[in-house]
Length: 171
Image (tube, rainbow, N blue to C red; front, side, top):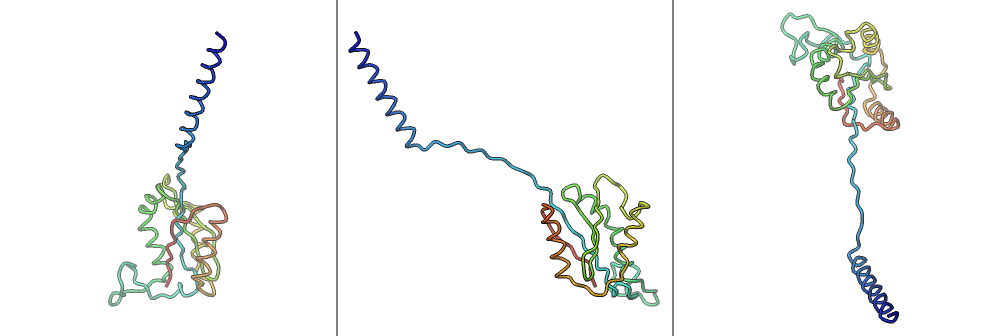
C-alpha cells in the first residue's frame, strides 16, 4: 500500500513539474495600465513694452488699417479690447486647460487665470481690474520674446505644470 502511494505521489510531482515548466515557458506576466489626465496650461502673453503705447492702432482692432479720419488708439488698448471680446472663448477653453494671461517685456510679469466657472472676465472685477490695469501698463524698456517665452515655460515646468501652448500678442 505504501509503495503504490509513493509511486502516485512521485507521479503527481512529475505532472506538477511538467505543468510548472509549461507555464514558465509561456512567460506569464501581470500588466497594469492606468491613465492619468494631466491638465495643461495655456499661456497668453501680452507685450507690455513701451512700443505698445503708440497710438497707431485702429479703434476696431479687427481692421488692418485705420479708417479715414478715425482717431487711432494705443496698441495696448486694442489688445485690451481683443481680450474683452474673446473672453467667452477663453472661458470655454479653460474648461479643458488652465488659461493664464501674463505680460512680458524684457522679463515676464505676473499671471491672471481665466476661470471656466466665472462668467465675468477677471479684469471686470474690482481687484482684477486694478491688477489688469497695472499688468497692461506698457512701460517695459524692450521686448524679449525668446527670453520671456523661455522664462514663462520654465516657471510653469518647474512648478510641475504641463504647458500645452503659448500665444504671444506683440507688435
